[in-house]
Length: 91
Image (cartoon, rainbow, N blue to C red; front, side):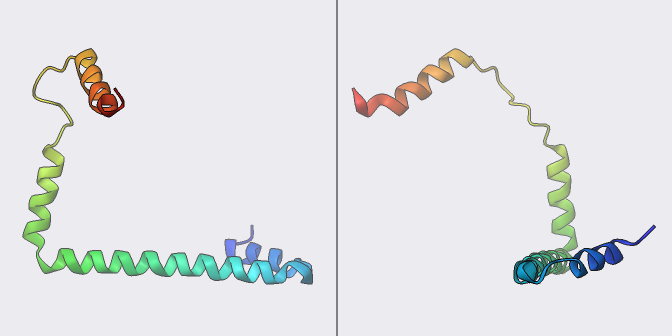
């Protein structure tokens, strides 16, 4: 079985000359995206390593969040209120 790089090289070698410029543009675009992602992840690692205790505290707060609203909501009343706020200026 061929590796992914070997498969990619074989595919590119079989491209007609007319579409080679498009293939080059796609490869450049893909490399730019990859480079941007690696820059972003490197910056995130640096930010976390600067203050690991703050990152740990934030992670613990995030894990504690369950997405539960601590009070009862009347969906019909909330919808009516939102509708009234949205269309208040049109009456």
